[in-house]
Image (cartoon, rainbow, N blue to C red; front, side):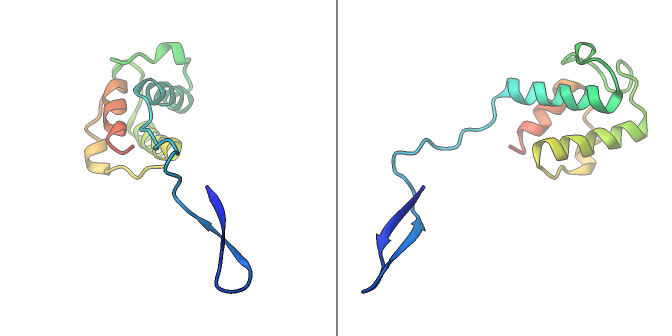
Length: 106
């Protein structure tokens, strides 16, 4: 929120001042993360979102190969505006695992 306050002898200045009554930023809800992960997976793997279930394994259930796995990581980073630890991200094998992993970055 911006407030105009007197500045020095002449004029005013507009400065950002914390609003004591403003609602604090809340972390993204888990169901929103789930929906966005599902959307990325469906888009990258060119499948219907209805095929993407929480316990779906990217490789065995959804048919992701190594290239698609890299594209999924890039898609998650772009969708959530995060930078994931690539080594740890490779350990994520399911949609629910991705939701859990991403939630730690938000």
